[in-house]
Figure 1 (cartoon, rainbow, N blue to C red):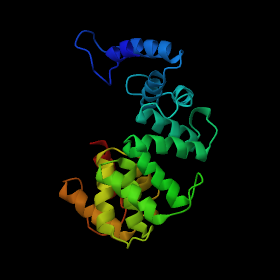
Figure 2 (figure 1 turned 30 degrees about the horizontal axis):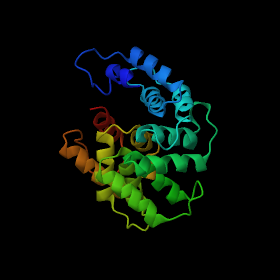
Figure 3 (figure 1 turned 90 degrees about the vertical axis):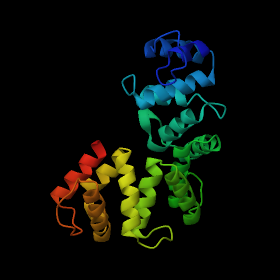
Length: 237
């Protein structure tokens, strides 16, 4: 495991050797075959993110399902995603997902907290539906810049869910931040389902896009082509 970390391009721990993901994966694999959870966790993260290798959910989930609560929090979050979303051939199991997310969150993983908010919002994985708890998780994640927290909190302000008053201005502020961190779910929601978002939201979003020099059309609260083009440019900028 420790030898593998020297070659891990994400960690950049060594000044003696050049990053080499192939070597890192090889040595993590050797340690993982002996049951080392840290190595299995890092393999899951490498294949899930796909930054230095081809993204492969099958491999990511294969490795993540082998880890327990002692693994790295990011690896536990991958495990939660595999069970929650049924990635890489993983059977959907919300109870397993909650267990993994809670273990990751307890170790400080922000995204896992945002994911737990969704479980409380919808009463999944054995969690009772609780808007107050869901909102707490979303807000904590959003405050730390997590894209899922930003998106879900913005959606709640847009629709007036979770006990919040509708607030198009706050919804637009949060959604702009989600777009700035290139959260694909937000981009797809705005461009594929613009009708879900209120006219007040679109009006405030147009103002914010105009302030950034991305939009020069009318502030009319409509998801017109120019507005959607500005949304895409913000997400790709």
